[in-house]
Image (cartoon, rainbow over all chains, first blue to last red; front, side):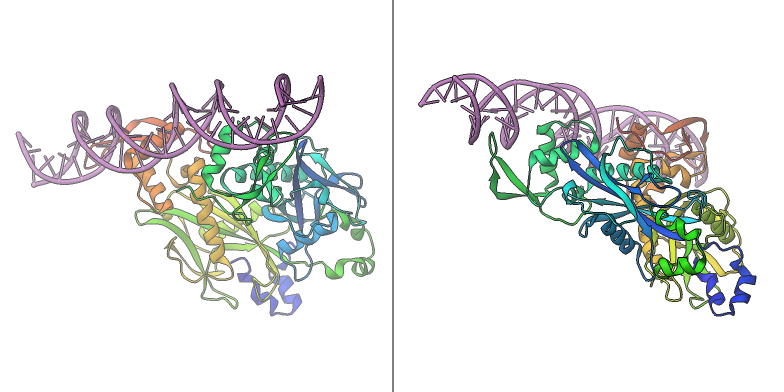
Length: 240
Length: 240
DNA sequence: TCAGTTTGCGTCAAACTGACGCTTACTAAC
DNA sequence: GTTAGTAAGCGTCAGTTTGACGCAAACTGA
């Protein structure tokens, strides 16, 4: 549907189309906004950018932008994220669309929210001139955000937490090789609660997601076995 | 973001705005499409409408339409559903947004997919003149659909199944009073697998969602206790 | 009164979960 | 070298949940 009743309009003179239905039809701008997550020693982090222009200048917001001609939503999200952080190969997942006409007081903008994950906060690079600054914030302690971006943040955190439980999404927050302790830190940071080391190991092992690597990580103490995810693409874990 | 860099444009002469950035910015139409579900004796059903106009005339699709000036996405979905089925008070939940510019060959249309649930397929009424017909189909055996509506159908079924497991969403597919057998039929229909009557009862009871009503339903055999959901609003079940 | 059918309670073993003890393997300090 | 300290990683145990299934209770219609 949706597109259905509209086609005749496309084939008529613009004036006729206007008179018939277009008067009521909104032509909102369509935007994408991406909540970028990474985990570091302090916990789950969110990357925010400070707006350099417009009425919201000075406020913090997620990487975003308007969809361009010929672009898919995913494509626009990737481009906006690249412009804001230099990142090109991230895990990206659509979350939810926000379309309240008053969410942006200056124009009707429908925004499709995305979540992106990277394994290391240090990977972010310089932002485009659209932004005056960019930095990581603790996910649980974000500053006041522009528009309805706080809602997006809540949504993103909830989705990430849920998916940690039934998918291998943690692979997007870790390098290709990691120790069990590092995996546990990712879970503990995102879920914001401590996990029992031994039970966590058992639970993850039962999921059969990991592949043991031949090498070990040597540090100050007993060396730790290195693991990799069997599948680097995110997929639901089938509970038999 | 998203809306951010754009404001200066709004305040400039149109020509300047065009030259600066607008050339590349898409102005897609924004549509909503709603996958309407109900359960009857045959199983899970999906309500489809046959398009009466346009290049896809004759094809089946979900209830949808373009977002109008001042409308929220939810509001547009409710209106489109009302126009297509007469329904006004349904459970409604946003699913996913589809924005591939080639999903509709005649125009760039971003469509926000929704799922709606009702307790009785018989509640649907007459459709607007935009459609030439409307009827229920078995959810597992849909005809060829217009646009990317098959994708939406898959997405909707997956979401419904998932939510049955961890929310009280079944309340939207049942009348206010129902027997355990009716509740089980809803689950079995949506999940498309038989459930053990006794284990199902135990599992649902453990969730503590139901309230036993004083009356009983009398039929040809042993009378069945009537139940109602404690909460009619859909909420996640907290696993202690 | 009985056959037939649905309702709804109960049992049992296997699997899973949360809490936690303890050994192993290393480094760094003495 | 010996030892103290620490992270890694194995194992145990009781309580809970899960899946399979037996069976009595409650009703109708013949």
